[in-house]
Length: 318
Image (cartoon, rainbow, N blue to C red; front, side, top):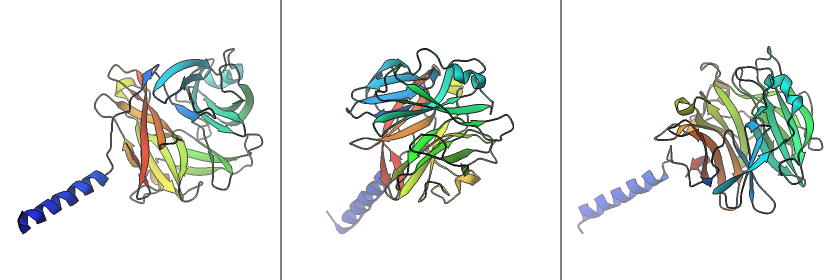
C-alpha cells in the first residue's frame, strides 16, 4: 500500500472511530415481551434480583420480571381502591406516574392523584416490605397543589444524594419542575424549602416527568418535553441536563439552563416509536437502565427499555 493509500486509510479509520463516538439518537427499544402495555413506568431491582415495575393505571398497577425482558401483570397496588385520592381525581380510579424505590428494607411508592389539565393535584406515599399487590400501606399526603398554584404536584421522583439526603422532584407544565427535601425517617416533606429545577417559559410550559439519577460527580435531570397521551400523535420526547448539585442549576450540553428551557434531546418519535417519554432510570449490574413508554402505530402504549453509558460526562442511550 502506498503512502497516499495509507494516509487515506488512516483518515477513514479516524472518521469511523469519530462516528462511533457520536451519540446515536432515536435508537429502537430493546427486546421486551409478555405483558408490554405500560404508561409512565418506573422500575426497581428487588433484593432477590428480580424486577418490579409500577405504572399509571387504576389504583396504580404493577408488573414483574425475572430477566428484565419478559414482563407479567402483578395486579394493583391498592386492590380495594384508594378513596383518599378521589378529591383530586374527580372520582376516577386512575392514579398517575408512580415512582418506586427500595430503601431501609422496604419499598417506597410515591404516586400522583389529579385529573387531566388540572393543577389541583396531590402526591401520596405508600410503603411495603414485599412490593406485592395488596401489601401496600398508604402513608398519606406528601404535597398538594391547588388551582391557583402555578405548579403541579404530579410526577414524583425520589433521589438520595451523595450525602444521603432525600429529595423529591415533581411537576408538570405551568412553572415547571420543582423539588422539596424529604425526611428519610418518614418519607414525607422535611421543611418548607421549595426549589425550582427546570421550566419552559417560551413553550407553553410543556415539561414534565422529572427523574434524577447520579453518576460520578454529576446529577442528571431527565424530563419529557411536549405532549403526552395522544396515541401515535403524541409529541413527547426525552431530554436531559446535568448539575454537580442535586438542587441545580441544571444545564444542557450547550450550557443553556434548564430553567430557561434548556435540555439535550435523547429520544424522540421515529419509525413506529411515537412520543417516547416519561422515563425512569435504575442501576443494574450491567449498566444504568432506561425505561419509558412510547406509542406504537396503533396508538397503544408500550414499554421501552434501553441501556445507558456515559461519554464525556453525558448519557448515551444504546
